[in-house]
Amino acid sequence: MSMAVNILFEEEIKDNKVVVDFVKSKKEAFVSTLLNDESVVIIKEPKESKQTLEDVRMLAGNIVKSLINSNVKKAKINEDILIQIYDSNEKQDVLIAFVEGWNLGTYKYITYKSEATQKKVDLEFFDENAVKAAKETGEVRASAVAFSRDLMNNTANELNPETFPEVLKEELKDTPVEINVLEKADIEKAEMNGLLAVNRGSKYEPRFVELKYVGDDSKPLVALVGKGVTFDTGGISLKSGRDLSDMRMDMGGAAAVSGAIKLLAESTAKVNVIGLLQIVENMPDSDSMLPGDVIRYKNGKTVQVGNTDAEGRLILADGLIRAEELNADYIVNIATLTGAAAVALGSETGAVMGNLEYASDMRTIGAKNGDNVWPLPLIDAYESYLDSDYADFSNISNKGEAGAITAGLFLRRFVNNPEKWLHVDMAGVMESQNKGYYAKSARGYGARLLADYTVAKSE
Ligand code: BES
Ligand code: ZN
Ligand code: ZN
Image 1 (tube, rainbow, N blue to C red):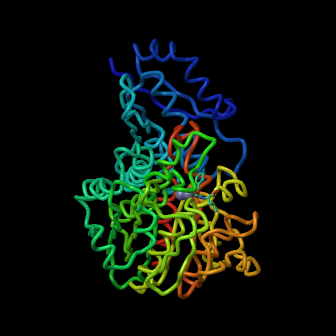
Image 2 (image 1 turned 180 degrees about the vertical axis):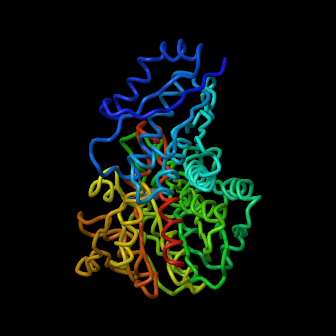
């Protein structure tokens, strides 16, 4: 028997958590009501007048998780009441948020769980025609975020620099995205020496991937540059003292860019965007780059490798140089770059640095779409922390402070005009807990943030 429920709202019930408990406790009642007619889930009417779109996504995620637990297969909701209760000024956005939260709430990374099956609950609205566009948008957004999550959750033995581009080709094959993969010989020719240096200890070849989506070629070119370290052991400056399993997610920047390009292409956005992914593995080996080595970049700058674990900035430098070669009008790079960003801002918000006005735009965009980000200052007085005795500069700071900022200052040196540039450090937000529309796994951070920022800069 497949169970179906109607989702209703009722003032008396206090908050989302109660709703979830209510759904659980009434499991029996569902079944008995169902025998006569349809079952009922009741949602509280929020007390606070201002509920955010994130509240809507979280609510939808909580409901769908609860329904899955109760083995419900189908639910129906009155869109008019949903809109009325949540925010009458942003009707479409409320519906989109609900569908997005609903779909992502069912996300589970179960590839390696022998017993688990992927469960879904079909969502229906009273007037399907009226919500068609919003439903599609919500679905596209959720599927882009889920793709970023999948990429990040995947293990490093499966997703490595050589397989990553193949996964992208498969995922984007029905979209107009053009994929150009630079292999090792191309990377050597292009003098992407950061990639070559960092990847030296790996048994895989490095890759540089360009994902181009042109929805309108009259729009400014936005370049999205993503760190794609499929596993970060630290290299010769080996990480130690903790479980490193999460370092399979050190390609989170590349996953965010891939998700953003998928989102933009599948929503036929009128933008002109290119994703630039630097994909490597940071391993200790007799061939590895060594502390003290100097990398000479295509733009003539030389960098002393003070610590092989500060590898992200070494490869992003090649991506930024490439973005400049392409004459991008806006450049955003994104990376799981520093533990210091997580220390500064915790696990609910990423850090953004660069053009202050754009950083503020991005903060507003993230507050609306769920990918929170908060500005950090690029303080000029800290530039000298990157001084090197025998190269132009070092990849680590010679002071034990401001680690997220000095990484930002390092990257800024590879952008000709920093006014068009933003750097997002997502180290703190690469994972999520099982809450609302999030699962205990990769958060899928950045796909929505980068896509919506790209659209905003194309208006
Ligand atoms: N991938 C790490 C940063 C990171 C740490 C991301 C924890 C997510 C969770 C990065 O490559 C790294 O190792 N950074 C060093 C830089 C240091 C050596 C200057 C760090 O943050 O400790
Ligand atoms: Zn590292
Ligand atoms: Zn790293």
